[in-house]
Image (cartoon, rainbow over all chains, first blue to last red; front, side):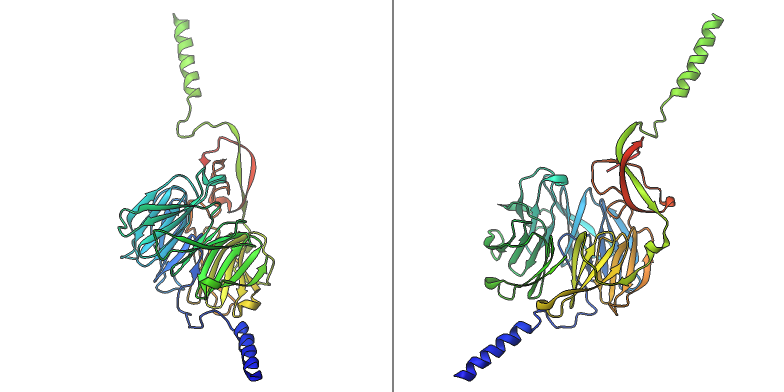
Length: 245
Length: 178
């Protein structure tokens, strides 16, 4: 019996020490950015959004990017999020979807306009999740999480809004959506039934700005540093470590 | 009669002299932003620096066992993450004007002011600039407009150097606004 205790203790010790990062070698692969990014990689292309333009660079030879084109897409563009064959672009006036079936020449597919606000986007096969935040330069809008059905990419349909004060960046891992809410914490939603997100909990104790779910690790950009959480079990999200600024 | 003709002719010249040049809007002297220029070649040197504290925290990026965080306008913090329980900042890559990060394989893309710069990070402690596309980004957000929207500003003249900051001041007839 004593040996069993010892074994459990040792397992616990080593368990704590092990990296929660996937050890698979992704050296030739693209990294992962947060939802507030203006640079994003998809396949062999680097896409950059500036205030009004979407710029495309061919990085088939990653050391030698080749500028392909620049498309004027709107005003106050802020963020870009890649998902499968589409780019989801957040502006202060709405969300734009560009198809990259031809990756060197993104094609406008659809848009959903909304009142002026700051609004990063993440998406899965059938839904786009957008947070709108008013105040400051972001316009006077009611803060919230907006869900668009994107089954028809040409015509995103707003199907649900969830009141949520001070939302910033957001991240999606499988059916879990993490929404940073500044000093109000980080809301964790189950979005398995996309049209009806269920708030599971709010993680407090940090001023959350943006988040990257990365395998079993949740990397949070918080006001005073970086905070890491183990999300291998969504029912039991564990704080791991904070690197202070 | 002759005198009236003189007066009319004079008035005509006078009116002509006063004619507003329609190509330039007359705004007058207003509060706005002036670009601060620099021609320091060091601004385009990409190099490793010791780990430092975060002052103006920017965007985050993750690749394999490293997290990167932008130090707005200054460069990129390197955070080694092989063991999340003991994660720490281990270094810094100086990329002046930088606000963005993306990584493909061993190559990191960022903006060095308005240039797209490619940095080989195969040896994270000895990074090297391998490529640069000058003036890739021009229309905003990478230093070419003031940080706060809704203001008049003196239009950027790239011949004067790189815009390293903005000074709030009274400016005459600004032709740019954001």
